[in-house]
Length: 95
Image (tube, rainbow, N blue to C red):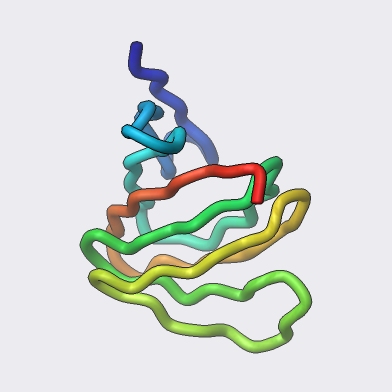
């Protein structure tokens, strides 16, 4: 069964699924700035678009675009800025 989630007044939406190995989401972000809280280790891959990301423990923003990935530890906060509508694929693990 697919789980559909909406966040930030519908500006971020994702569909949850189970891959062969890990739970995952496929989602989209509208233009805006968002802060996410992780409960598990996450690997986010940009499918289409571009994100500026401030990872936990960093004061610098990093750019990620099509095909690039970043990791976020469990129990962390991270911030993103989407200058264009952006699609992503995210996997979750206990790592």
